[in-house]
Length: 361
Image (cartoon, rainbow, N blue to C red):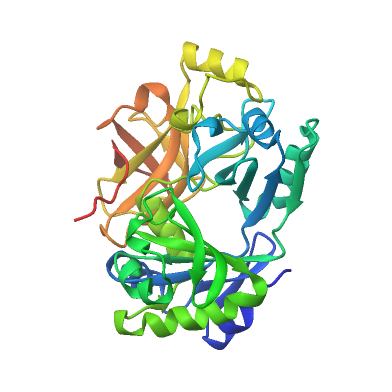
């Protein structure tokens, strides 16, 4: 099992450590609800250094990215990032990822920790264009500093105006006395803030500076359990739960990152699927009664017939109600449709709702 450069710090803080995607990661510090609330109201810091980073460069870098990803990376300008996915040949998804345009002919791809080798091999197998590929995953650390007070709390650490980094934009500059740090606003919590990409050798210094600067703002370390409840409240997909090798991006509600103005892996079949209409859809739902939906619970209709499966579920800390994502037969996917979650032999009613679940107050 791998450690991040900060594992010893998490252990010294008393974090509950568990294996996640092959890494020894902090799951909890104080508790999910308390950590969740810190990120929604103040500022919290996640160590997400387990994520993977690939640097693609050369005159054909964009062509390779266009070939293997579903979104249109040609629209990117330097300093912008894009959410995308890697379709497979069978209609499913190899992984979802972020594409950063660093320079002309240079792109950074950020992939899920559990899929680093799989994604590297997949992209490499399509690289007949002479694109230089570097796997930087073991050399870089990543901190997600999230919450409505993140910019104010961290501004003293950089000469850049952090408030000017718009959503899905980034800048490269100084942070906590370290140069050439990537400061990116591509958060996974819906609470505002940004991410810091830096070399492993610099991350402990940056961590310490971040907590010193944020002390007056009640900054706290946050574990991956709260990261999951935060992302679920926003309706963001988690690879391995809500999307995988067998789920189509169109079924997953990711048509907005599936652009048919170019050819990419399996695009012809996905276009046919779009034209024909999908038979199942990923929906968000809220429990009508007090109950907690969980991953892999059956979804049924009023007569008890199976119509789908829960992919993610929790008791929402912000809303104090059970929420979840799940695939259902398309005829049950309309907003306000009533569906039932089978919880220990009981079919508990739920209502299909528009995402995100959590609306900023």
